Length: 402
Image 1 (tube, rainbow, N blue to C red):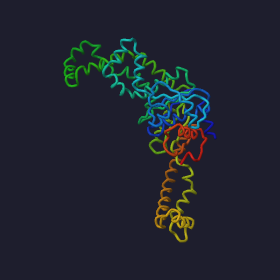
Image 2 (cartoon, rainbow, N blue to C red):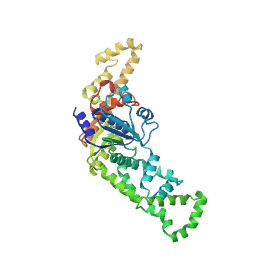
Image 3 (tube, rainbow, N blue to C red):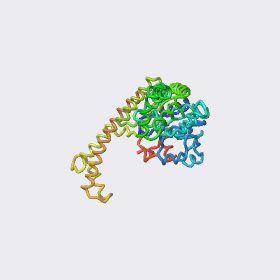
Image 4 (tube, rainbow, N blue to C red):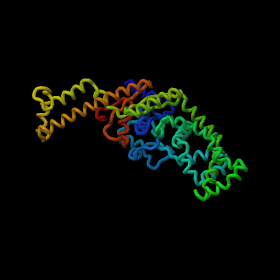
């Protein structure tokens, strides 16, 4: 019950929660379930900003045709899924193109600059690859949503990446870009007549090889982009301050496989070094701890040794004698199946034992840790999301897991 109280307290006491972790650990689904868990306990307005939910989950959340504009999950849909809520659950899905368009409109010093950037032929291509734009846009959205004051809690599903820290570094990288050598090189033809004269033959050759005005379009874009430096740098600084604000917390999600668990440890330690608050660690898709218990292992070993035996392993032998008639198979086949099951269980117990060690490592890095077991099937609807929310809050049903 301590885990339930602690997680409820986290959701009730913070204004912003960033769900982080390496790719493939279930961040998006956990973020959505955290939002549901919050509105089950709170009477406020909660928003989940997600990145790329699975198609069926997106359909259940009403996100198929949605983008940066938040939409409320229909109360009747929640009721139909057997979910009692006290608050309002809103969701939005990060739209990279719409997000960049909004940034340009906000930071452009005048209408002419704004229109010129949006009309630049390389604008869409460049921004889709620009300084991990998903990372930066997620941070921008977090800032905007917090500034509106429309929501009591904003939960951000951070973009998947090989290194989860890229989300934290995105604002700083944006600020650094404006003072970078690359930007100066790209815009120097416009700042130096001598350079323009000397480089004219190069530009002519490049245009013939790469297409008419290729380099010119690049230079045009970055000259216009540089005109927005003040706004971008100011906002990046504000976002960095928001990440260390006491009202912001991180929930680190990981499975207990070796690579994701090591990444989660590294992320949690890095958050602590940066003075960012670790609200909780969620260990996802965890095998039951009882699987690794001495009694379970001994039972599996006895099963493996006893199948087909005359004197040892009497219980296993009796089971092997009784099953053939029940399942319509001969004794030798039942022997092989039971023996294989016993060996596989022993292998599973070894995995569970390793998971317990990794779970202990993660638990030492946060005041709140929550273990979510393997669930019966993928989560693709509101009812499944409700099952996950119950596990996150510590109120579970044995039938929910496997």
